[in-house]
Image: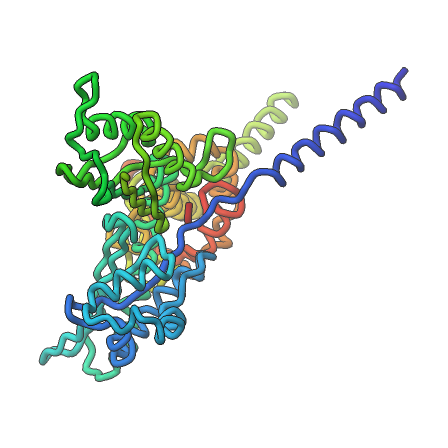
Length: 293
Length: 154
């Protein structure tokens, strides 16, 4: 009897262990955001020129990337991306600001960190100011900001001052970013959506349905129901355009899989179809473009 | 008479054991930034309470770590709680692990330690001050590896 019980107990133990192991195998890993560290440029400045001529900003970028590496979080390499894009027509564009935007879009980065260094000279010694600003690449929402000033020294070795300033501020900067990640885990990730109309479309945002709801009302009702925690923000609505500059979607679906933006868009387009509206879509990471036909 | 002697001996032994093992559990926020350090390190000065040097120094070290875990050190590169936004909740959820860590493991995260002289005025005043250089990166990594805090990222 005792032997039978022991065998039964062992059998149950083996089964439950296997179930646990299988569950661990099945659980999909969370898709981590891609981060790119770029130099700060003025509206008429070029990223690649800034990177090539400014040794200090290169060093600061390297230090920030190192801080990410220390936390086991790889970053997209800007220099490599620039080399990859060097012959691309994007690099021939006149408008430098659009180059920055295009670079961010083409790199597939979900977040970018602007790095700025300034040299401060004075009779009491020289110092360096470093400013780090993290942004969501799709919504432009600021995620973390940190500025640091190195101590003053009578030196022209600004590299050491940058090294010291960045080293003292990265932990705090990373902690702020981690708090943002915790917020995203709890409240969902951010998406942006632009809804426009094709030239031949018979619809516009003011199109009125039988229940006297306008198309914009129908869309807003859908967003309210389908955004995570009903969190969405409409930047503006005109007859021809609706800009949703921020809406939240969960990181995981109810059955534990990674939430797919394409499925979210598919659901939205199906909703439009129930209203008798055909549409097309473009996706760029977390940015959605819907064109109503 | 003999029984009395035995009782006195037992009582004295217990008293000595009790006094040597007693530890102050007074938790205060008296932990300040000592100096700026490079990434991954934290230099703090903490005050400790207790009726003996060993006890008060131990209390100061525990206070320093508790403040890092639960409150963060203002002005430092860890000015937010290491246990995250809901530090109190996280602490309660992992009390056994963290209490054990504070009692037995924190010495392995101390890179440098400097104790002040012991000055006992009253139980309401700190009797020791301890300067510590803490291996913050290792502490964070230890908490991450044991599932107490999330790793960096989503």
